Amino acid sequence: MNVNTMEYSATAKARPVSGKKPSIPVKCRQRNRFIPAFLIGVAVLSVLSLLYLEIDWLKMASRVGDIGLVFWDLAHLDFSNMDLIASSLVETISIAVLSLLYSLLLGIFFGMLAARNVFRLPWLSVLTQSFFTFLRAVPTPVWVLLMLVCLGMGPEAGVAGLCVHTTAFFTKSFAQSFESIPDETIEALEVTGASRLSIFMNAVLPAALSQIVAWAGMRLETNFSECAILGMVGAGGIGYVISNSLQGYDYGTAGVAILLVFLVAYGIERVFVRIKKKFY
Image 1 (tube, rainbow, N blue to C red):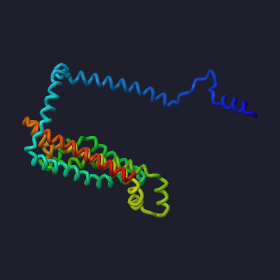
Image 2: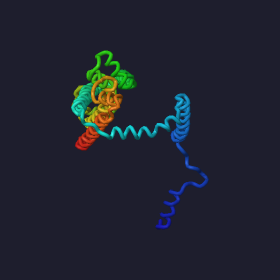
Image 3: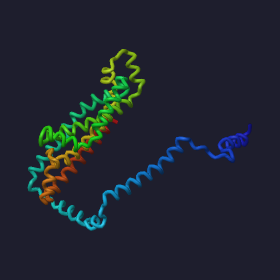
Image 4: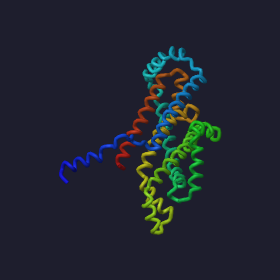
């Protein structure tokens, strides 16, 4: 066979058969049909929500200029109450760190129970995941308010309330990380006669450590931001200072507190970015 014949045969194989349209997989068709239905559903719900809320757009448009005035007042920083702001900020950081540490330990334990490849008990995995799905469905402020009723006003309620939601978050996240470990690794250790707990501690947990650090960094930043909000409902911390300052029209003090919240949150994010780079 000469070169021209080979080129012709290759071209003939690559060229589609005339008169036949390329087939589209069934899954692709179903997916394409789902997208317009989803968009239409979102549009309908948006219209119904606007009608139900009865938003006065003219009033809102007339108050847009006030947003700039408020931010202008916040920009006039007042450092006269720096002692109170600093102590409240340290309290907020302490609440965020304690809730993270307690939730990390609980999340690793319950994540081990929720993962399907650790104990290989489907009922245990389903039961654990269902329970923590319920806990995760309830927003953090609701848990904090419940703890305020049980424990009273103060940082204890903030730590306990954050722990509930953060543990539920870690349980799902860590279970997914544990399940990403190849089955071949676990089966190889099972052949040697290692116990389930030993396999988890010596193989599954070390292999998922980088993912655990990544989840912990993201959640610490979230917990700190939530602490700033939860302080407004009586859980202590910098949020209490911000709330009182805004209610008393002390925008300078509130501006300093908000600026510090931003700087600390940004610092946490950058620190964990560097830590993640060490693991990868």
